[in-house]
Length: 382
Image (cartoon, rainbow, N blue to C red):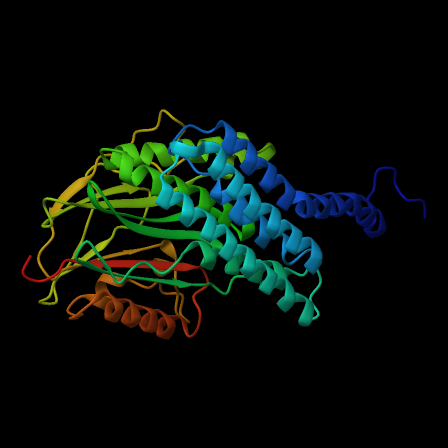
């Protein structure tokens, strides 16, 4: 029987897919070099207050599962030297302490990438093996989500990250908290997508937050800076990826001169919870919610923070949607308010440990999606 003209046989489909697969592999192998070049260009062109560290930090983990030890080591060296050169080039435009922190971060991630490469090689993994890529993405994400200090400006702080069991790889869940001249400010967010691209976008958001949190006068201004950072990243992408650079986010601040005041800005993110020492629980609904960062373009409404009373001893609990998406064997989603109401938690660590155990019990193991948790407690008597 003659094959109809234009019909695609399995063999023909394989022939057509082969060049695409080779192109993808080639692009992935070139990604570390592109990140380093992008970091150098961004470091030279970006205005004061912005950092190229996310580019350099992403390059070594991107090389680790797909390259030889020698190539990974050279990438790590190039990334570290690139960060040092950028810091020296920008000179007085950069905060010295922030610059040292960026260099240490890039160096630490570089060492981690070498460990990932060795682990992949010893386990017999091959450069393109999905498990190896997933492990690299998770390791890179953990490297850019360091454990916050246990106490910050008198407030107790704790954070947790749980990797999901989905085969798509680590997600872009993120959190950060820092003391600024405006008070304690924090962010919990979730970048669209999975794997190393999502981790790179998360690093972009975290880098922008670290700079904006101390400089920007309001939470709306911080959100606008994060929006611009994602917009710049979008402009470097082609095709469908241009529409994928957005993130849900929750921004909060406790003013330095008013520790009993809590301001929360929602950008498409799950509502946080406020737990009081007597077992009370309240969901903090948005005053005027905004669209996710990067989802609506530069003209999107920025939203308006909601202001609420932060009682002494109370705990602010923020989380990503991996919590509410966690399902049990019957498909029922986890409901944090119903599970935590009435509980008495002496500190943030006890709260998060209890929550992690309860989610694990609910799902019968690891949750499907990644989970990021951040809790801050106002001290008693202040």
